[in-house]
Structures are given as C-alpha cells and as structure tokens.
Length: 101
Image (cartoon, rainbow, N blue to C red):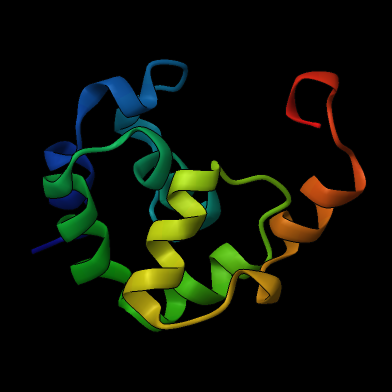
C-alpha cells in the first residue's frame, strides 16, 4: 500500500485541522502517531503500525512532550517498556495541574 492510501484510510476526524491531501506520513510522523494513539480507532492503530513499525512508533513516542496517560499506558504495555523511558512522563510530573494533584 502506498503512503496516500494509508492516509486516506485513517479516520477523518484525526486531521480536522489540516488538508489531508497535503499530509505526508514521513514529514510529520510524531503528529500522526500522537493523534492516532490519543484519538484514533483500533483500525487506525493497525494502519500506522503496519506503516511505521512498532520500534519506530515507540522511539517517536519516547520523544513526545505530551501524551495522554491512557495512550502512554497502551504504548508501554504493547511495547513492554516502562513509562519512565518517555519524555512526556517526566514533563507531566514536573508540571502538575491543580486538579491532578
């Protein structure tokens, strides 16, 4: 499957703010991976996993500044890694909000 086919098969609600016809999966993989992990369906997950591979997804997730706690738990579980390896885990701890204390 080509890159444009992957993008067109992803859920349209993931990319409400950009023109999907101009999107490139190799230019901004972090944005695509984060949106699929946080707001995507299982079908979206299977699409990005088949395109990027689990190792690349994990390495990109490790460098993200923010990631939803459920998405972080999922990627840790599926890749058998600890949450302490992810940048978003340490950033979240250093900036607690009033309602999450």
